[in-house]
Structures are given as C-alpha cells and as structure tokens.
Length: 481
Image 1 (cartoon, rainbow, N blue to C red):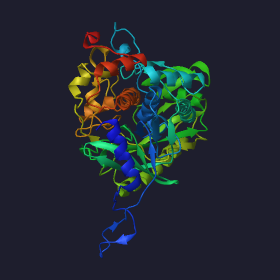
Image 2: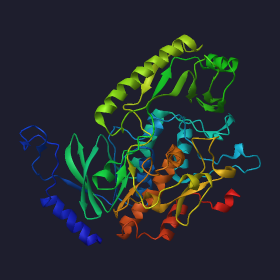
Image 3: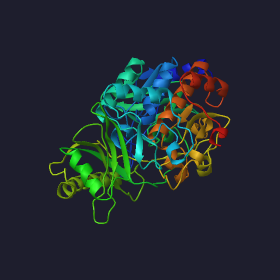
Image 4: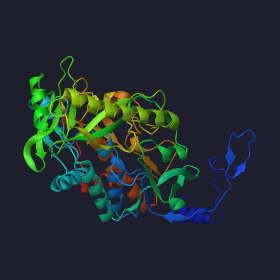
C-alpha cells in the first residue's frame, strides 16, 4: 500500500468504517448475559506520520527520535506523565557502559549514547541524577550506577517531548486497532475526550504489555516468568545511621558514590547487609534522608494481563510496602521515623505479552557478544551478573529484525516485549537497553513514514546512517576480543 492508497483508506475509515467490540452495553445479544454487542459508530480521526503507543522507558525515546527525524509524531500514554519503569519500577538505570571493572585490562567505554545519554545529561544538570557513578562494591554486577529523581525525570521527559513537537495524548488508553491486511491503519484510543482513531504511516508498540500489537493481530505468548513489583519512596530516614548499620553488619555488597543533592562523593546506591537474621536493604537515592526506590515483589499465578489476578496482586504489594516500612522502623537504625512518600500508581511488570518477531535474541547471542549485519544498538549489562555476563566485558548487538512483529508490515515493537529466552531477556528488558531500543525503532518508523515504505523495505544503510547521526554507538564482535 503506497501513501495515496493509505490516505484513501484513512479517509474511508473517517466516514464509514464499522469497527465492532464486545465491550459495550447497548444491545443484549446473549439472553444469558454472556456478552453485549456494541453498535457501530463513527469516531474522529487524527492523522500523524508516526504513532507511539506507550510513553514509558522506550516510548519516550522512540517518540523523541521519530519527531527529530521530522515525523509528525503522537505519543499515547495511559497515565498523566511519561517515564514508565524508570520512574516507577527500577532502582537505577542499568547500564550505559560495558562491564569493564569486572574484567581487568578491559577498556571503559560508554556503549549507549544518543538520546538516552542526552536525557541523563540534562537530568544531571537539573539536579535529578547521580551521574554515572562508578561502583566501589558490586562492580562484577554493574560497573556504574545511574540513580534518578523520579519526579524530575517525569517533568524533563515531558519537556523534551514538547520541545520536539510530539503530540502528547496523556491519560489515554489504546483499546483497539484498525487493520487492513498486514498493515495497521490506526490505533483506537479512549480518553476523557471520547473515542478516537490515531492514523499513521508507521506505528510503534512500547506499552510493555503489547496492547497495540495484540489488537493488530500479532502472534504472542504470555510467559508469566517474572514477579510483578511496586516500588516505594521512603522518606524520614537518617542515611548516615543507615550506612553505619550496613558497615557494622558485613558491609555493602553494592556501593556507589556520586552526586547527591548536588554534592559529589555521596552514597547513591547501597545494598546490604546479608548477615543471617539481619534485614536486607537495597536502595538508590540522589537526596539526603530519602530512599528513592525500595522494591517489593509478588509472583502472580497468571499473566499480569489478567485484570482480576492483578487486582489481588496490587493489594498484596501495598500490604508488603507497609510491612517493609514497619520492619525498617523497628530493625534498621536511622529508619525510626521512616514513612512512605511515593508509590507507583500501578504494579510494574518485567514482561507482559511476548510478541513473535522476525528474529528472537538468544541467550548465546547475549553472553557470547554476538553482533549482526543489521545491528541498531549495542548493550553490555546483564541482570544475572556475575553468574551470567557478556564475555570479556564486551557488548552484543540487537538486530533491526528483532523489532518486526511477524505478519505485520508497519508496526515495530520494543522494550520488554521482545526476546523469548528468559536468560537473554534478563538483559534486553533493562532500562537503558529499552531506551536504546526506543531510539532505534523511533528512527526507523520516521524513515518508513517519510519514504512511504513498510518496515521490511527500509534500507538498513539509511537507518544506520540516521542512527549514527543521532549519536548511536556501534561495535562489532571484534571489540569483544
């Protein structure tokens, strides 16, 4: 379908498309109350070049990349702010660098640059980031720690999107897709303004749950191979006393010093103790007297796409948050006056739907440092380190085809939705990887929209050139030697 045909199909949608959903309550079609059939209706159409569904870790960068390529871009986000896991579920950004400290003689190098690095630089300047603080202890897990202030990140990411001219559809949910054969014509959305269709030439799904891809008919599974989590910000703590408690009970297994309220050389990550009978503690912070992230987890019996099971998990997580604070007050010196200052509005996932794409990144690809002829980024962190690491403190690449959902011609998926092997996914799902993936798919979508071509017809040479111009760092397998 060329641009003229696409525009014609969008026009038809705007005046006469009839899309049915079994979610309304207008006409009873099953006397037993099994379902309702909602009558067809006309809905307004908004037209863009690129539509990004999901304004989280990958989605923010994807929208920025697309807009900076000149594409008229919309970003759809269910909450009233952007940021996703970075501001809700993480403990720090892992990781912009290779794992050089775990491999004596390996050169330190920043392997994720471009828009993600720009975002962190601006965040640091605004007083909302520790900077890339080198790990003093635990550097066989990550060589650096990059802690962020969640609220400044929300504001800064929204400001950058506004500067780039991205249309921000906040408080908006993707509820369906209009599809013509193998081509997505529009994302159907609901908000307080009503029901609309966002039409575009190219689409990106960075919802983490894979909502748009699933509605569009992509093949997927739901592995349910992770706990769900909710992080809590805890205030009213005396960090100096907490540090002494850790030192007196075996010391920190993770420790990093960085910018803390604008002062260098302060604790920004602390993990410990692990002594028997002593409460464990893993915190990151960029402020005095405040734990930015304390994470609690729950294993769900079914996929987090299940509403009713998720509701039970939400309750359990909030009970555990309160229990943790009460436990800290009683057992951790410096936490006697601790209280919950922030929680995430909903539980966080590490995987929802797994979308079947043209290439599936394998465990061997990751740990052997595999690079591809169509790499669009490189990455070097593994969340199972030190047990599993990219060899020789190196990097692996993610090929462009790993973001192409099988059977769909103008949709890209990025973030938690790719990579079936849990071991490999323990690397690709991490925040900085998702940010880098976002720049790759955002750039690709804009080029496809400009050229009027499907995602598989985009020339890799054009994509590589645009990514390099955008500051993306590339390596080869030889760099791991």
